[in-house]
Image (cartoon, rainbow, N blue to C red; front, top):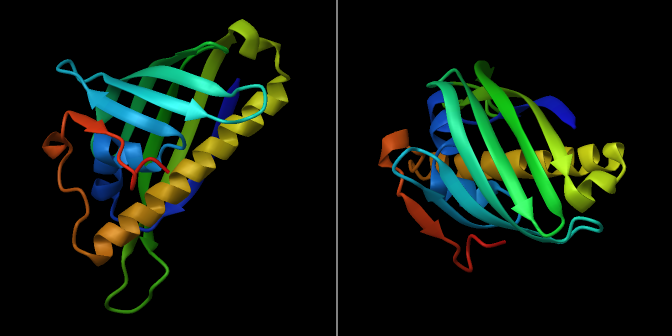
Length: 181
C-alpha cells in the first residue's frame, strides 16, 4: 500500500511539527484513537478503534520517530496489529512555510504545507481486501486526521495555546469523553 499527498494547515510550522509528536494532540486528531503513550525511548504506543466494513476492530499501534529534524521533516516507522491483521510500514513528512493563512492583512496567521508519503505491508485478513479500497480508507483517515489537526491548531492559535515544544508533551494521555470522538 502506498499513499501520498499534501495539505495546508493554518498554523506556524513549529506548532505543526510539535503537534505531530505530541501525545495529547495525537489523541485528538487521529480518527478512532483511544489512547496514546510516549515511552522512555521515544516510541509511541496507542490503541485505535475503527468501525469500517472489513476493517472493524481495535488495533494496537507502535510508532517510532526516526530521522526527525524539527521543524522541517521527519520519518515514522510503525506497526498496527489487530484481530483483522497487521500493517507494518513507514511514513515521511515535510513541512514548508505556505505564506499567510485564510486571514490577510497585519493580523494574518501563517500557514504550513504538509507533504506526506507512506507505504505499508498488509498482513492477515486485511491483506485479502482490495488494495485500492485499503488505500482509499488510509487516505480518508489521513484527510480526517489532518482536518482535525488543522482545527485544533487554529483553535489553539486563537486562544494562544498552540503547542510550544515537543519535550513539553505528557508521556501518557488516556481518552476522555471530549477527545475520544
